[in-house]
Image (cartoon, rainbow, N blue to C red; front, top):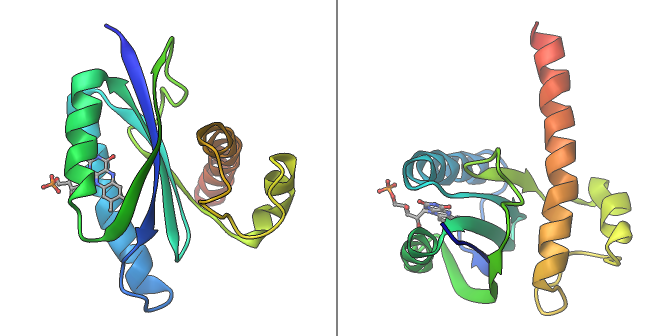
Amino acid sequence: MPLVQIVYHSRNRLAPASGRPQLDMLRAILASSRRNNAETGLTGFLLFDRTWFFQVVEGERRAVLATYERIGKDPRHADVTLLALRDIPARTFPSWSMGAAMLNLDQREIYLRHGISGALDPTQVTASTVVALAVDLQGQEIEQQRSLQRLAG
Ligand SMILES: Cc1cc2nc3c(=O)[nH]c(=O)nc-3n(C[C@H](O)[C@H](O)[C@H](O)COP(=O)(O)O)c2cc1C
């Protein structure tokens, strides 16, 4: 079945309160995303900070478009802007029903690798930069999860 991938950015409208509440709301978004995406065969990655979301969603065209339409109506973000919709030969994030990483300046080195020298600016960033950044941050997430597992075990 042909696969497509979309990349969009949007403005984070989660309550501006700092810290916990935002993260709890993000966990809720991720929980329903993972449940729905697992059912409809979607995969992808969500990058976020206090101001922006950048998301990659991939899978069968009809499922991707239906989900994007639903996401677009979600009041937890605004100014949803499509950066790319393209056919893909294979998934970029086959093992994430929806992976996620918070963007912060600790990742400065990774940003610089992609030519980003300050905060991520949606008017400057291209779809391929978002995907490449998510691929790198996915590696970092896996490392973090491994260390957490080591600590727990
Ligand atoms: C930034 C952002 C990303 C989202 N990503 C997804 C997603 O990948 N898949 C999904 O089903 N819902 C996603 N949602 C949630 C949908 O907008 C919607 O709330 C949800 O799909 C409704 O399903 P539920 O009734 O099962 O919670 C996202 C929402 C936001 C704000």
